[in-house]
Image (cartoon, rainbow, N blue to C red; front, side):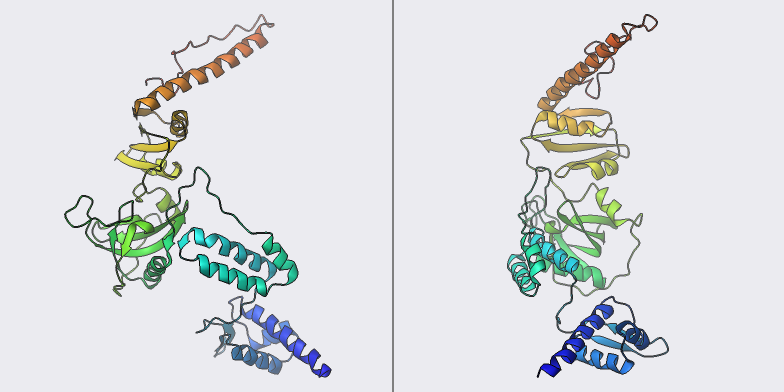
Length: 372
């Protein structure tokens, strides 16, 4: 019996090596595989049959450029991961339930299965990576997406089939016909799924508006598949990331903060939408102006966020935000006065350098809130 251990072990190691080559997705000729494995072509053929008996879908490509490649199978065979891939899968399994609803039990079972077949050194590394996911104050992810809805949307995107959707309110409910907020079902050509700032978005061409739209997936009720095909269209600009990030009409709503204010900014809505923090809302007013609604833990925080856009503000609301802007003007002027006084002291010993004039409080240079 001991005489069989060596050949069997060699065959197993060679089959795993063959599988790793085929898993790269490229086409391999028989000669290339034999050279890589340092065996004869007949041995390679036997190893390929061994993999097929184990349900690995090894395809034979005929013709002058023929060879072998790994195809898609009807069942999921055992998978081959290197150390880095196994660690990546373990981390992904722990974070997936935070973005897709209903995967908690399945991901836990998959992680247990993965750990059982890991070598001891790798199992220790995975156990050291047990994660506790925390949300910081600036993260406003949408509720987890139902796995069935994600699968239906993804299938419609990949198959290029029209979706019939209805808009849901912020609380996830559908308004009844005739009630405020009711929006009839509409046809949508789904082109892309995108994830940004913890939210899933479906990008598509809306037949009702004859325009491209970005919809929050958690704000859509998906009707059963239609099976109606559509011809893909070209996305405006061709950049899916920029299109989603600069779109001001994504269905987002203001996050809950202790302080929430708004102001008219002298900037286009698409510019502000790209850089506005999560949980804010951008409303276009005209091609060069928009209204930003944003929250923070204090009124000074709201004013500071407005100031990051380095643009003129007007129509600032509510009065508490106006008062906070005035307080910040005083603080910032104090900083500039201190620096000017320090500069005057440095120049005091040089009779050839006249002192610089200083702006008094409320004078020129009062900042973005000078007129508030």
